[in-house]
Length: 99
Image 1: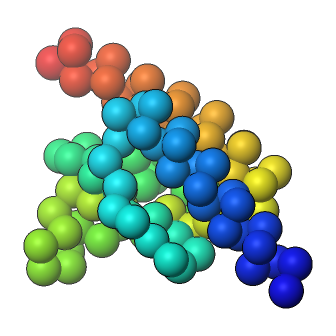
Image 2: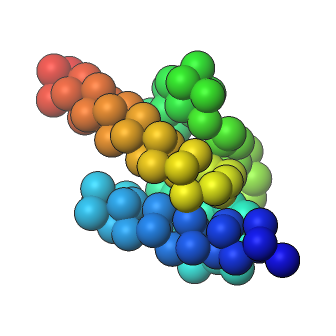
């Protein structure tokens, strides 16, 4: 199926983006990745959603404090998500330095 292959390729590329950004993620065979955001997970989730990226804050799940699930789409969608991710991380990191 074309879409399954597309999502697998997009997930691999997005995992590389996460690695370059210094964001821990867990291996996945699904159409999402679980990432470690930390204390500012709620703000990260809000900013990503506002920009149109499908995310779900999983911090209330046992053992998942500070973790967010990012849904994987097509390569084009994930290129856009990568840009938004990097912009969001830059804002959060700048905010952390100011505190």
